[in-house]
Amino acid sequence: MKTGIARITDETIKVPQDMILDILSILLKEQLTYEITQVLENHAMAVFVIGIDQGKPRQLKVFQNIQGLLNAYDDFRFSEDEIIDWRDK
Amino acid sequence: MEYLCSYCNKPFVPKRTDSMYCSHSCRQFAYVLRKSKESVKDFSLEKVPNEINDLSVRTEEEIPINAEINLPVRTEEEIPVNTGIELAVRTEEEIPVNTEIQFAVRTDEQEQQKTMLPIAAENKAEINKEDYADYPSRYLIQLNRLYEERDLWHSLSKFFDSNDEAGLWVSERYRCLIEVLLTFTEMKRIELDDLKEVCNAFTDVINSKHYKCLDPNYPYTDEIKSLREQIKNICIKTIGEHFKYRISPEQKQGLIVTRFELSQWVKKRKFSELKFKEK
Picture 1 (tube, one colour):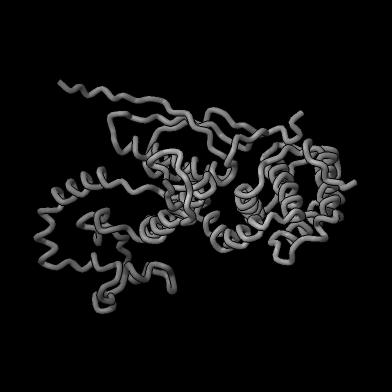
Picture 2 (cartoon, chains in turn purple, red):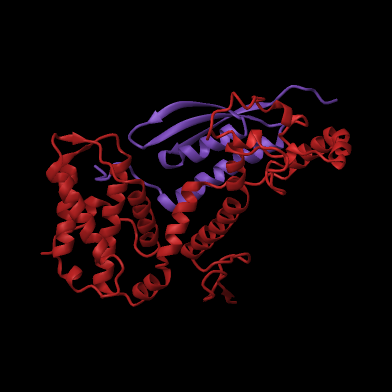
């Protein structure tokens, strides 16, 4: 028997400054609950915690969509593991 | 057994039976190309019109049946001359056929549809839930457009295939400097001395024999010089030891694309590993 209990999980993503507008607009359009928990000033990134209802396929698709965009950005911007300390002290 | 690379069409010996590309570069370029096509398609056909609609004109599904009586009803005396609400007070004769404000003129057919609307809307909502179209990223679209406009893949391919020593020497250092500059843009504050060091590295590259021996077709010759000039100006004008290094969004996109182009040909090297000044 199915129950009506929502299975909401918190997914954490790091969003680079360049992508924040795009990701925020998706979250707002899809009305997902989210929280910006941290700003990584020296990496120009914000940490988002998004509440995903595992019982709603659309929300899962939205989250996959967001991850796909962030991966595509990473391909462009980094391609490899980056070291923030540019001198590598 | 040899396969043909799905991106460059060159034969290669696959490591796995399901290999499609001869190299990491080809796989990456194929991915970017595919994403670019998808993004541009989604962006131009779906998302942009919807966003415009959101701002200006509501879609038919969103408009309540009695929408026309929800519009502000003002008498002619109340309406100031030359205001933006001309549409709301137009007479039926003035309303052009097939415009977005057709909903104001309801036909008998639409009356019949009124009773069916709740069911239709419900079905549409169900369909929408299943047919989720990925949202594109404006930023990625801009990067892809820039990458395609520059279209340096083939010229770089010919250039690096010839193992041009000067080109490789300069490219390796230019990539490193771009990486550093991109990192600087993302840091809260940088030290002026660090930027000066990078500026000096640019100067060393420009004064090197390798730079002077560059092939006339090398695509980054002028870019390196203008970037050095820009950094030099920032170093001269900046007051204080620490500051936020800022560049325009367009310039950052340009650096990201250049970094991506070079990353296909030269390995990433650390600033401390490379010698910029020739002996």
